[in-house]
Image (cartoon, rainbow, N blue to C red):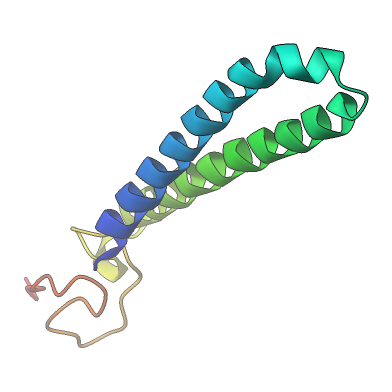
Length: 102
């Protein structure tokens, strides 16, 4: 699996997970307000939501960082997945994209 596919998969999982947490929070809101332990459960769900948002931001930042680095130094980055490349390679070691020497 190349970097781009992995990033898409992780982003999709993160978005699905975040939506699931938001729906669960919405369904549990009446119970949380009437339960003595509702505050603790509510805090735990909020922490999970924040972790999900941080995960999505980290995935987006990683992809953006790689793209910016490949624009700044295109000779040493794969044009397909933006992975950093060593000298003398014929194919990208991450995605297998053929690299031409021209």
